[in-house]
Image (cartoon, rainbow, N blue to C red; front, top):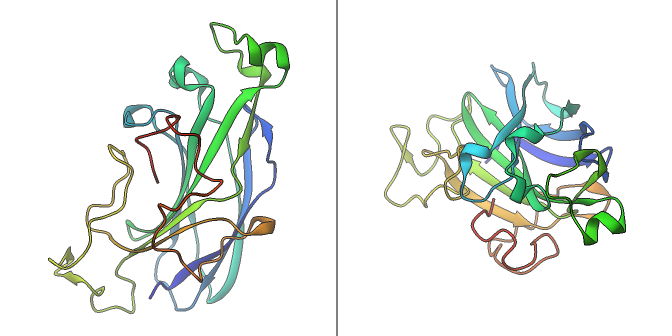
Length: 228
Protein backbone atom coordinates (compact mmCIF):
# COMPACT_ATOMS: atom_id res chain seq x y z
CA UNK A 1 0.00 0.00 0.00
CA UNK A 2 1.33 3.42 -0.93
CA UNK A 3 1.96 5.84 1.91
CA UNK A 4 1.51 8.81 -0.45
CA UNK A 5 -1.37 9.05 -2.93
CA UNK A 6 -2.00 11.84 -5.43
CA UNK A 7 -5.53 13.16 -5.03
CA UNK A 8 -5.59 16.04 -7.48
CA UNK A 9 -3.50 17.61 -10.24
CA UNK A 10 -4.82 20.95 -11.46
CA UNK A 11 -3.20 22.88 -14.29
CA UNK A 12 -3.59 26.58 -13.63
CA UNK A 13 -2.80 27.85 -17.14
CA UNK A 14 -4.05 25.38 -19.71
CA UNK A 15 -4.26 25.98 -22.62
CA UNK A 16 -1.37 28.43 -22.86
CA UNK A 17 1.29 29.86 -25.13
CA UNK A 18 4.02 27.33 -25.86
CA UNK A 19 6.71 29.47 -24.22
CA UNK A 20 4.67 30.20 -21.08
CA UNK A 21 5.64 28.63 -17.78
CA UNK A 22 3.82 25.49 -16.64
CA UNK A 23 1.79 26.24 -13.53
CA UNK A 24 -0.15 23.59 -11.66
CA UNK A 25 -1.18 22.50 -8.19
CA UNK A 26 -0.66 19.00 -6.81
CA UNK A 27 -2.72 17.71 -3.89
CA UNK A 28 -1.71 14.45 -2.22
CA UNK A 29 -2.44 12.47 0.91
CA UNK A 30 0.17 11.06 3.28
CA UNK A 31 -0.96 8.34 5.72
CA UNK A 32 2.28 7.69 7.66
CA UNK A 33 5.32 9.59 8.89
CA UNK A 34 8.16 10.13 6.42
CA UNK A 35 11.78 10.63 7.43
CA UNK A 36 12.73 12.28 4.15
CA UNK A 37 11.32 14.70 1.57
CA UNK A 38 9.42 13.79 -1.58
CA UNK A 39 11.09 14.50 -4.93
CA UNK A 40 8.91 15.70 -7.82
CA UNK A 41 10.05 15.97 -11.43
CA UNK A 42 8.46 17.33 -14.58
CA UNK A 43 9.76 15.89 -17.87
CA UNK A 44 8.98 16.97 -21.43
CA UNK A 45 9.16 14.19 -24.05
CA UNK A 46 9.27 15.59 -27.57
CA UNK A 47 10.52 12.64 -29.61
CA UNK A 48 9.24 9.07 -29.16
CA UNK A 49 12.06 6.56 -29.04
CA UNK A 50 14.74 9.25 -28.70
CA UNK A 51 15.35 9.83 -24.97
CA UNK A 52 18.32 12.10 -25.70
CA UNK A 53 15.74 14.81 -26.49
CA UNK A 54 13.85 14.41 -23.19
CA UNK A 55 14.02 17.57 -21.10
CA UNK A 56 13.78 17.64 -17.31
CA UNK A 57 11.95 20.92 -16.72
CA UNK A 58 11.95 20.88 -12.93
CA UNK A 59 13.22 18.83 -10.01
CA UNK A 60 12.09 19.93 -6.56
CA UNK A 61 11.99 18.53 -3.05
CA UNK A 62 8.83 18.88 -0.95
CA UNK A 63 8.99 18.40 2.81
CA UNK A 64 8.83 17.81 5.61
CA UNK A 65 5.52 16.11 4.78
CA UNK A 66 2.96 15.91 7.59
CA UNK A 67 0.32 13.18 7.79
CA UNK A 68 -2.90 14.25 6.08
CA UNK A 69 -3.83 16.18 2.94
CA UNK A 70 -1.05 18.37 1.50
CA UNK A 71 -0.70 20.51 -1.61
CA UNK A 72 1.92 22.59 -3.39
CA UNK A 73 2.19 24.58 -6.60
CA UNK A 74 4.60 23.70 -9.37
CA UNK A 75 5.96 26.56 -11.51
CA UNK A 76 8.61 25.87 -14.15
CA UNK A 77 9.85 27.08 -17.51
CA UNK A 78 8.69 25.71 -20.85
CA UNK A 79 11.02 23.32 -22.69
CA UNK A 80 14.06 24.76 -24.43
CA UNK A 81 12.99 25.22 -28.09
CA UNK A 82 16.55 24.66 -29.32
CA UNK A 83 16.54 21.12 -27.91
CA UNK A 84 13.41 20.03 -29.77
CA UNK A 85 13.88 18.51 -33.25
CA UNK A 86 12.08 20.69 -35.79
CA UNK A 87 9.99 17.76 -37.02
CA UNK A 88 8.69 17.16 -33.48
CA UNK A 89 7.66 20.70 -32.58
CA UNK A 90 4.10 20.47 -33.91
CA UNK A 91 1.59 17.83 -32.94
CA UNK A 92 1.69 15.47 -29.98
CA UNK A 93 4.34 15.46 -27.25
CA UNK A 94 4.22 14.20 -23.67
CA UNK A 95 4.53 15.78 -20.24
CA UNK A 96 5.38 13.45 -17.35
CA UNK A 97 5.08 14.26 -13.66
CA UNK A 98 6.90 11.82 -11.36
CA UNK A 99 7.14 11.51 -7.59
CA UNK A 100 9.89 9.64 -5.74
CA UNK A 101 10.85 8.82 -2.17
CA UNK A 102 14.47 8.08 -1.37
CA UNK A 103 15.27 7.69 -5.08
CA UNK A 104 12.32 5.32 -5.60
CA UNK A 105 9.69 6.46 -8.08
CA UNK A 106 6.24 5.57 -6.74
CA UNK A 107 3.91 7.35 -9.16
CA UNK A 108 4.01 8.70 -12.70
CA UNK A 109 1.33 10.91 -14.26
CA UNK A 110 1.59 11.32 -18.02
CA UNK A 111 -0.21 13.84 -20.22
CA UNK A 112 -0.38 14.18 -23.98
CA UNK A 113 0.28 17.72 -25.17
CA UNK A 114 -0.82 19.06 -28.52
CA UNK A 115 1.09 21.99 -30.04
CA UNK A 116 -0.14 24.06 -32.97
CA UNK A 117 -0.06 27.57 -34.40
CA UNK A 118 -2.51 30.15 -33.13
CA UNK A 119 -3.75 31.22 -36.57
CA UNK A 120 -5.27 29.43 -39.56
CA UNK A 121 -2.72 30.70 -42.06
CA UNK A 122 0.22 29.16 -40.22
CA UNK A 123 -1.74 26.00 -39.45
CA UNK A 124 -2.34 25.47 -43.17
CA UNK A 125 1.16 26.53 -44.23
CA UNK A 126 3.60 25.96 -41.35
CA UNK A 127 6.88 27.86 -41.75
CA UNK A 128 9.96 25.76 -42.50
CA UNK A 129 11.57 27.05 -39.32
CA UNK A 130 9.24 26.87 -36.31
CA UNK A 131 8.01 30.23 -34.99
CA UNK A 132 7.62 29.51 -31.30
CA UNK A 133 6.14 32.90 -30.51
CA UNK A 134 3.02 31.88 -32.48
CA UNK A 135 2.63 28.41 -30.94
CA UNK A 136 0.05 27.38 -28.36
CA UNK A 137 -0.14 24.21 -26.29
CA UNK A 138 -3.06 22.24 -24.89
CA UNK A 139 -2.76 19.34 -22.43
CA UNK A 140 -5.17 16.42 -22.66
CA UNK A 141 -7.69 16.25 -19.82
CA UNK A 142 -7.15 12.53 -19.25
CA UNK A 143 -3.71 11.46 -18.02
CA UNK A 144 -2.27 7.99 -17.57
CA UNK A 145 -1.42 7.35 -13.93
CA UNK A 146 0.96 4.51 -13.03
CA UNK A 147 1.82 3.56 -9.47
CA UNK A 148 4.92 1.63 -8.44
CA UNK A 149 5.48 -0.46 -5.35
CA UNK A 150 8.43 0.82 -3.31
CA UNK A 151 9.87 0.40 0.18
CA UNK A 152 8.54 3.01 2.60
CA UNK A 153 9.92 3.73 6.08
CA UNK A 154 7.29 1.50 7.70
CA UNK A 155 8.03 -1.47 5.40
CA UNK A 156 10.46 -4.24 6.21
CA UNK A 157 10.49 -4.96 2.49
CA UNK A 158 8.03 -4.11 -0.24
CA UNK A 159 5.85 -7.10 -1.25
CA UNK A 160 7.23 -8.81 -4.31
CA UNK A 161 10.78 -7.72 -3.51
CA UNK A 162 13.59 -9.86 -2.16
CA UNK A 163 16.71 -8.10 -0.96
CA UNK A 164 15.60 -4.90 -2.73
CA UNK A 165 15.26 -6.64 -6.10
CA UNK A 166 12.10 -7.80 -7.88
CA UNK A 167 11.20 -11.41 -7.19
CA UNK A 168 10.66 -13.80 -10.07
CA UNK A 169 6.91 -13.27 -9.71
CA UNK A 170 7.12 -9.48 -9.98
CA UNK A 171 5.96 -7.97 -13.29
CA UNK A 172 8.31 -5.96 -15.46
CA UNK A 173 8.65 -2.25 -14.61
CA UNK A 174 6.47 0.15 -16.59
CA UNK A 175 8.42 2.81 -18.48
CA UNK A 176 8.37 4.35 -21.97
CA UNK A 177 10.48 2.31 -24.41
CA UNK A 178 13.93 3.88 -24.53
CA UNK A 179 13.05 6.24 -21.72
CA UNK A 180 15.84 8.06 -19.94
CA UNK A 181 13.83 7.69 -16.73
CA UNK A 182 13.21 3.95 -16.14
CA UNK A 183 12.85 2.48 -12.66
CA UNK A 184 14.54 -0.93 -13.07
CA UNK A 185 13.72 -2.15 -9.55
CA UNK A 186 10.16 -0.81 -9.48
CA UNK A 187 7.21 -3.15 -9.45
CA UNK A 188 4.07 -1.83 -11.14
CA UNK A 189 0.98 -2.11 -8.98
CA UNK A 190 -1.58 -0.58 -11.37
CA UNK A 191 -2.18 1.89 -14.16
CA UNK A 192 -5.16 4.18 -14.55
CA UNK A 193 -6.24 5.71 -17.82
CA UNK A 194 -8.61 8.60 -17.61
CA UNK A 195 -9.00 11.95 -15.90
CA UNK A 196 -12.00 13.08 -13.85
CA UNK A 197 -13.72 16.38 -14.44
CA UNK A 198 -12.27 19.37 -12.66
CA UNK A 199 -8.67 18.27 -12.88
CA UNK A 200 -8.69 15.50 -10.27
CA UNK A 201 -6.72 12.29 -10.55
CA UNK A 202 -8.79 9.71 -8.65
CA UNK A 203 -6.72 6.73 -7.55
CA UNK A 204 -9.68 4.49 -6.82
CA UNK A 205 -11.35 2.29 -9.42
CA UNK A 206 -8.08 1.74 -11.26
CA UNK A 207 -8.35 0.23 -14.72
CA UNK A 208 -5.66 -2.39 -15.17
CA UNK A 209 -6.49 -2.77 -18.86
CA UNK A 210 -5.20 0.67 -19.81
CA UNK A 211 -4.97 -0.26 -23.49
CA UNK A 212 -8.67 0.58 -23.85
CA UNK A 213 -9.30 3.56 -26.11
CA UNK A 214 -9.79 6.99 -24.56
CA UNK A 215 -9.64 10.61 -25.58
CA UNK A 216 -6.17 10.87 -24.03
CA UNK A 217 -4.68 8.72 -26.78
CA UNK A 218 -3.43 10.72 -29.78
CA UNK A 219 -4.36 9.85 -33.38
CA UNK A 220 -2.92 6.63 -34.71
CA UNK A 221 0.62 7.02 -35.97
CA UNK A 222 1.25 10.33 -34.22
CA UNK A 223 3.22 8.88 -31.31
CA UNK A 224 3.48 5.12 -31.84
CA UNK A 225 6.41 4.23 -29.59
CA UNK A 226 5.95 6.37 -26.50
CA UNK A 227 3.31 5.24 -24.02
CA UNK A 228 3.75 6.40 -20.42
